[in-house]
Amino acid sequence: MENLIFTNEQKIFTIVGCGGNRGLAHLDMRKQIEAASKKVQLEYMISLPGSYILSYSAFPDVYSKLTTSFSYKKIEQIAKAIQSDSDPISLKTGMFYTASREAELQKNIASYNEVCQGYTISNSCKHCGICAKVCPTQNITLQNGQVSFGENCQQCMAYIQWCPQRAIDYKGKASSRKRYHHINISLKDMTQYNA
Image (cartoon, rainbow, N blue to C red; front, top):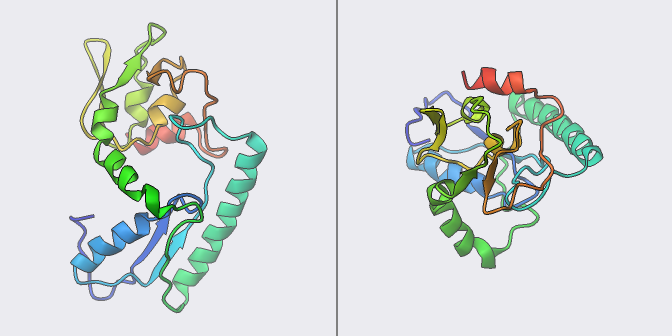
């Protein structure tokens, strides 16, 4: 966000996709935008099915479908509000935000790249390269037939979720957990997006 350029005519809005959890990403974005001497007019949160496999398994399909359906309706409402001249909306926190855990969370966020260095690849890896293709930050490469992680991990977990061999793990946390795939996004969609 530090590299974004804003014009005087722009209407600035933010949409955060973890509204049911901490929900403070909009505050981080607001600070960046205000540092550029601009103001966020509209802020929104959308609750999505959880995908952080290092903490929990994917939720049941019925829950994922219901949450996704609600998120689509919310997106339609957001689009209408953006197109109209809605009053400014500033958000606070997600419903599960706990101030006492914020310092620990910030420490974890600062050590994302350290966590990345702790991933393991099992012998079931077929070196197909799907993990590299779905990584939005190009942090994963295949070098001499081996999967290698760089230092730009954002812990999206796509590389674990989409591995067809279930070969990627972190301290035994993901190996037995159910994988999450968005009901309307295929592997082809994921790899085209990052191509």
